[in-house]
Image (tube, rainbow, N blue to C red; front, side, top):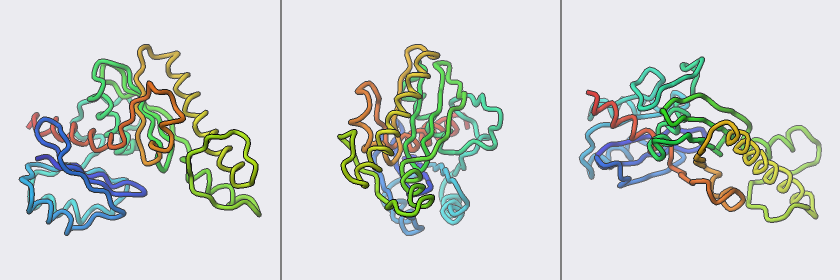
Length: 243
C-alpha cells in the first residue's frame, strides 16, 4: 500500500493506494492526527508515503512517517513524472505540482487544463508531452464572498451554494448570483481561451467547490475531486520505481 497525505488550507486528507493505483482508503478531516496514522499503520501494510503541505504544521506527521516507511516530502526538487517548465519552480505550490501529475496520469497523451476550485481558483496547464507550463491564480468563492462584507458597510457574509437563477430578487440572492455566476463565467472564459491555443484540450475540475460547480459547467469537463491525492500517488510510485 502507498500512502498519500495532502495538508491543504482548509482541510487535510489522506488516501491509501494499491500498487495498481486503485484508491483503497480515504480520510478527510480538519486536522489529521498521529492517532489517525497509527490506526492506519495498524490496519494496512504501508510500504511508502508522500506528504504535501502548504505550511509547516505537518512536521509531526512527517516525523512519524519517517520512523515507519520511506517518506517523501513533495517539493519541486523531487523527481516528477512531469517536467516543470516554470520560471520559479521553488515558489510553485505542492498542490499545483501534484494536481498536474494527477491530470497527466488521467490523460497522458493530451493537453490537460486543471481547474482547482478551492481556497483559490487555480488553473494549470500540462501538455501532451508532460510539460507543466504554469497557469493562473485568482480568489476562490469564499474569498469573494468574504470580501463583500469586509469592504462594504451593510452586505452580509454568505456561504456559497448552487445558483440556478440570474436575477437575484433579494440582497442575498443578488450576492450569490453575482459571485457564483461570475465565478462560473470566469472559469468558462478561461477554458475557452485555453482551447484556442491548445488542441484537443481536456479539462479536469477539482477542489472543494467542484461539486457545487459541476452542474453549471460543460458536460465535457472531467470531475476529479481527489486529484491532488492521485497526483501524490503518481509521484510516490514514480520515485519508488526509480529507486
